[in-house]
Image (tube, rainbow, N blue to C red; front, side, top):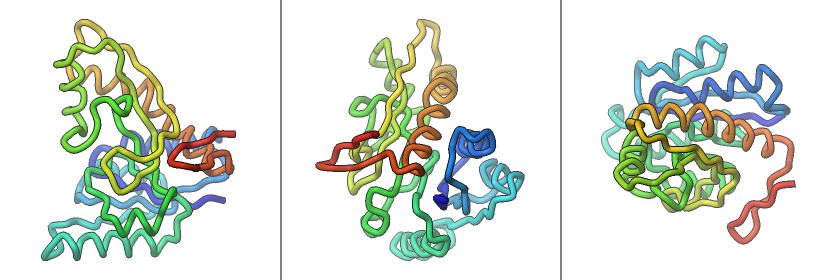
Length: 207
């Protein structure tokens, strides 16, 4: 059984998708051991508590500097001894030591088809605003492993989503969540939990 720690910052819709798909057995051989948020009072914490999952807050506001926060975050995650860390809308720069500790065991979901609209500054609604400003016809989401860069780790799964002529950033964000994020993040977790993912030369092999 794979123990997972899910890190969140806000509403926790991707967290809910994971909870639901573990319950429906679309994700097998895995359980969420804990949910950790960098913000107090967010909906994701409520979702965790409703599902009977241990929920904790590790907020940078509670620490004198970023190094102390980074250390506390790593130590809190390590307490649960996870086999996998999932970043489900976690708007925190993951420190290098964290990445090294959980090498090829951190999965992130990004709301675009990497390498498009990713990297520093591309998160949340900003991604969808950029997609619409550029006028592209297809966007989507990417589940990938986290490395020392920003959105540069090995890609596990991607799913495309059509951009409609009357889209706003919010309507596009919702469609990308519903049609891509909530599908491929749970799928990536299931593949990992069942030993079907191998990483070699920064590329993912599934099988």
